[in-house]
Image 1 (cartoon, rainbow, N blue to C red):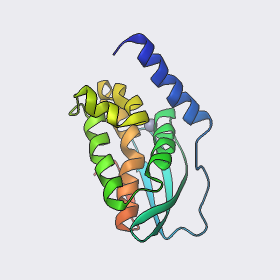
Image 2: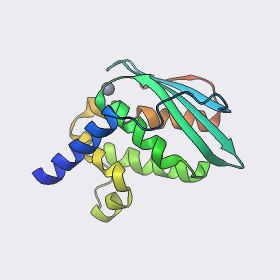
Image 3: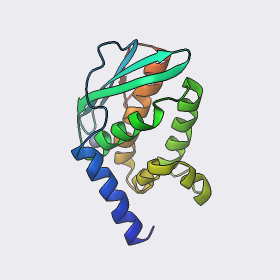
Image 4: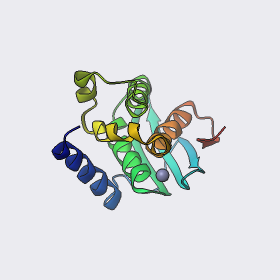
Length: 152
Ligand code: ZN
């Protein structure tokens, strides 16, 4: 990745960390989940309003490193208005991206802003920070009401 692109990506992550989108509790949430990454100390509470199989609203609260917070913020903006299936498909691609399985440039571009997390693949410990919000999302979609941990 060239330096200019890397700097742009860092700006997006810093911006979402400083001003996270949808950072609140949804009182009318009908799906919730809690995520925890003990390796870094990242915590997230996720709130979803799902109607007719569509994510009508999404919000989160929590604390953690810049990557985990920026990832939760971007995830919340992206899954809003998507069907459960669409959200799950984005998660699969995102997971392939951060674990280094998705290398096709065109496919990465399709991920839009999520492509900012491409650099994470070089830092295995950070993969968990970046994917925590998404694992929590999948749990909330299934309405398992469990605490998700990145460690088994
Ligand atoms: Zn973290």
